[in-house]
Amino acid sequence: MTYLTNLEQLAHEMGVRVRYAPPLPGTMWGVYEHRFRFITLRPGMGMPQLVTTFTHELGHAHFGHSGHHPKTERAANRWAARKLLTVDLLKEHSVASADTMSVAASLGVLPSVVEAFIDTLSMGQIVDLMNYMAELHT
Image 1 (cartoon, rainbow, N blue to C red):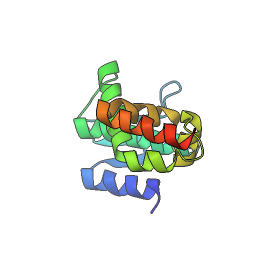
Image 2 (image 1 turned 90 degrees about the vertical axis):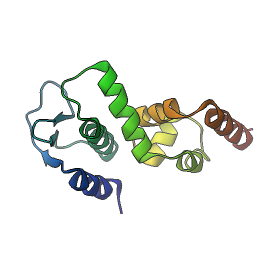
Image 3 (image 1 turned 135 degrees about the horizontal axis):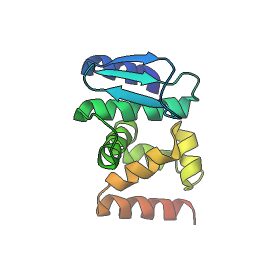
Image 4 (image 1 turned 45 degrees about the vertical axis):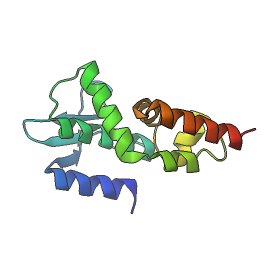
């Protein structure tokens, strides 16, 4: 199953409808309308951009967010990162390189997802991850 199939299933389970349709305000990639439990995604995005945006908007649905505020954006980013990644998956995709861009490309997500995921980790998990990567890349 692909990320997209999983996300479509998750949206269905959450009772959220999804459409791909312009126009979206400005350069927005996606928007969640809580009143209608509806996500609109900009058509034509690359897969990493689409997966990241779709999951982020599902995060807004999960929390019942409406509006656009830094605190809710951060919460949606972190929720999305936890849905898309695990520590083991991050380790697996860090074998070739520990660079955030390379790891994100290998995972099929935007670098912001990797960064948001790391922000959700405990200090112990971060130390474990750093030690793992240090062993791989020394």
